[in-house]
Length: 470
Image (tube, rainbow, N blue to C red; front, side, top):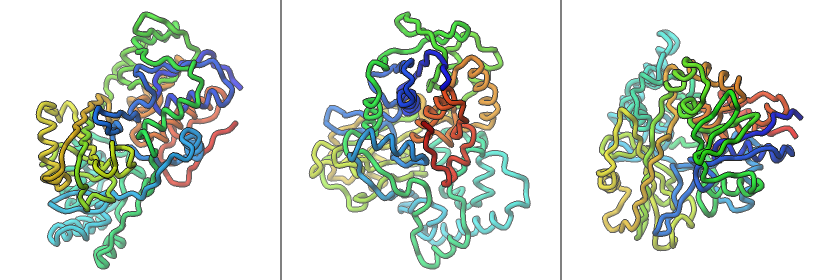
């Protein structure tokens, strides 16, 4: 086993915890995890508000591409899991359409259905004959046609990303968007059949208690507590001296640095980076997210009894997604028989500003308009949390920027991984992020390749289920 020297891990989210657990599993003791917050989990943390409602930092569910990850979560939580079949829907033009939208256009009104099908057929007939799509907007139009683009995919993606779709690349979408099968769509229309099985998360599991954050607290509990420094923020990374400067002036030396700090922030922190690398780091594009938890008293509508989450492309609402969070676990509310909960997510970007003063009123008004909040329901809790770094945007020049920044950091033994460390949305789920931490440790100690970072399409293909060597 190779010895990289002292390993510092910046961030106790899924990536950092995956790296720490793997180091300990391999018997490597010379490491420390530094976390600025008072708890593990990062963007996968959970909170309990003053009324007793549990909230996640966004709509998370557990599904996996890795046997190693599944085994780790089993160790973390044991049998404390609930298992769900996904019920996700799109609310548009006053009706619910099952996800994925393109497979279920039979649910639309006749005019919209015919328009969507005609666009799909024209797109299929033209495929391969025109120029290759150069951005996300062109890819949507070429793949699905103008009908589905106008009805759902363009307004929804503008709402969730907060940037013009023509400024986004197309290399990130493998296994993220269901490609249309015209024959299957026609059959669904003929038979008036819902087609809801697509995707790796068509079934998922969720912690019985404590929300998603319970998973990562459980993983942290598997690691010796003396390995953690909570409540310590990193202010600077001295690449030449291989030192990390903490807020109180404390300096820690490292042989290898594994970090999930957002890549643009990390580049600003690093003393000794070339100007071209700093410019590439500064070019990273992201959006922020507002998480709004609505704790409710009264009877839950029958239409929401089995739904997991819903997408909202229409402009009457600020949110792009709403989760019926009390459906994930009865312990998310103070008392199951009397309370239930909704959790909404709102995107913010420099091109899509959010007025926080009006957000509560707008959200509640839209929830009533969309039929999610009955007049008789009593709102007894409204929880609001804003995360500056919500989505790592796959902008057009992303891959070129990453090709400049990541190798240069590694030349200084700095390994930037995770949702915002690697800035690859296609491998930014919890399982991906955790396994990026595991795999970078395997690389440092065993010389093994990092499959998740280097080959996202293969990892997401459905044939890749990876463990870790001992």
